Length: 369
Ligand SMILES: Cc1cc2nc3c(=O)[nH]c(=O)nc-3n(C[C@H](O)[C@H](O)[C@H](O)COP(=O)(O)OP(=O)(O)OC[C@H]3O[C@@H](n4cnc5c(N)ncnc54)[C@H](O)[C@@H]3O)c2cc1C
Image (cartoon, rainbow, N blue to C red; front, side):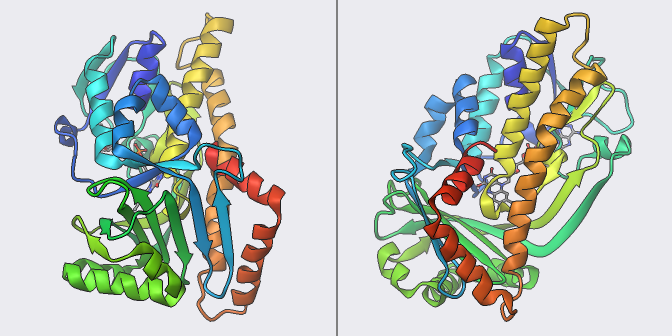
């Protein structure tokens, strides 16, 4: 939807092949997305951000803990930023993009694409079908998926104390628990929960009563950082609990004659760094910039010209691969609860905490995926 909006704003004609399920955008997605500065900038240019801001909360501080004393703290103030990220309501983002599209010029809604069948004739087919893309498969693009055996469990929480814009993450080995400060349903005292746990544990959590999930969460926090419980106050579930299987994958080709891949159709990674959608929105931003440049400098080329599309692929493949390696590396480092890496990984975390330039570099990478 963001690509259709951005292309329409550039004067391109767009046929949006909308999935059946999309005729009524989900408003019940319990996820909150941590969006970086580049993503917010794109949503601002698409005129979606002013309304979405009402459904978002800024992150001023981020506290990360290891499983044996390791700790890192990122602060917007230290990095001379107004905020580190915005936590955004997934359903509101979808709804507002879809509303904006209704008023976008030159955008026609057409039926969902069926793999192997000709779609609407167009210079360029932009494939944004998510990780299970059929069109990618039909094009013979390989997408080697490495399953983590972990599921991302997500829910909304209400807290008895204000969050003060602090995001918290605990690398608990093997699970990773994150609480993202949010403003719904309780202004200034809600969180988005993202808990990556081995699949059997995820199934247990999904089958539990609300009280048992809350108890399991408090127990996990108490084990990782006992003093955090008092800072957070009582945590209560404010939504259903949902889960997603987690994997690492990247397409071996991002473009070809007349087609490109964007978003999860091109890359999938663990949500521990909250980068999947940020990278997808950066794909959109980059593709539109490449098409704009080509139209200005080489007007004889069509939007589906393979040479033009290769420029997009080249600009996006490296940042995506390096972010995937960074998140995967962190995950592997914390994969084994008993391993000899325990003191190394916690010591490494504390070392990064003391090295200002590395922290600034990490923040820079996260802000501009
Ligand atoms: C628990 C969890 C937490 C996350 N947290 C964050 C976060 O904090 N920050 C962040 O940046 N990312 C986060 N992510 C990642 C983020 O959710 C994904 O990267 C993002 O949703 C991918 O968007 P997409 O549009 O590429 O794919 P999808 O969201 O999968 O959307 C693809 C769409 O294409 C439609 N479709 C498929 N086939 C067709 C067809 N043939 N014709 C028409 N339509 C079709 C599908 O119905 C679907 O609506 C998180 C992920 C998880 C699981």
